[in-house]
Amino acid sequence: MKRQASHRQSKASTSALRGLLRVSFRPVSRRTPIDEVVSQIAEAVWVGELRQGDRLPAERSFAETLDVSRPTLRLAFRRLEEAGVLEVSRGRGGGARIRSQVVPLALLGALPEVTRAEISGLLEARRAIEPRVAQLAALHATEEDLDHLAALVEHQRKAPPDWSLHGQLDAHFHLELARATHNSTLFVVMRELLLRLAVARSSLLRSPHDAKTLANIHETTLRAVAGGDPNAVERAMNEHLGWLERVWERESGRPRMRGVPEFLLPAPVKAAAMPGSGQNRRRTSA
Ligand SMILES: [Zn+2]
Image (cartoon, rainbow, N blue to C red; front, top):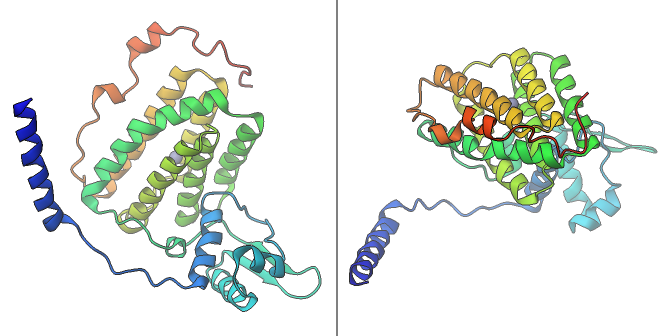
């Protein structure tokens, strides 16, 4: 007990000291109502809640919902229009529609800072979380979720070779996978992870990676999720994340990757110990 108390005391004084030395304060945000409206719409597009072609509510009712003036809303629309996200037509039958699902990250508001040294931790966090997310999606995804994921892979295959578009489509695939768990906490965790990854990708990844390979990997992942076998899902995710790790090692000059511990990899023993674990599934893949 005594040892524990003194340990606690020294820990407390160290953290107070650390607090003084290590907290990096930032300038207070001076966001205007226009910034707020822009980031709310941009965020809804970025996470895939608003999709290309979707129409926003009519100006008057939308301004009321957001509790801003109509001129503020118009200025926010203009900014989104200039960024290529919205298309606004005037007159009868007019209105604002989502023109593109590629959202410049700056529109999302305050972004997390990700340094080169942190990429390794980011990929490790993905290893710790995403295979479980995909397995839960395999258990809880509805037919509609699976159809939407399949449409995203198809879209990815046909998309022009624009790297920011492919980066965004990749984020959408993983966000939709997280949404298919029907667990809002996991969705928020994955959203933060993917946002950090998008920030890292936009600032640190020099050359685009192969869009075709990415679409193939997503297809394999989706097939495993639709099949409902947790071991197959884990193997597909392992392939997926391993590929991503190799891309980062190559592209970003090996950012001090610490190896993936064995317990974050699919264990062949586990596969042997859980035969037919997909049996309880209510649906099988085509
Ligand atoms: Zn992916």
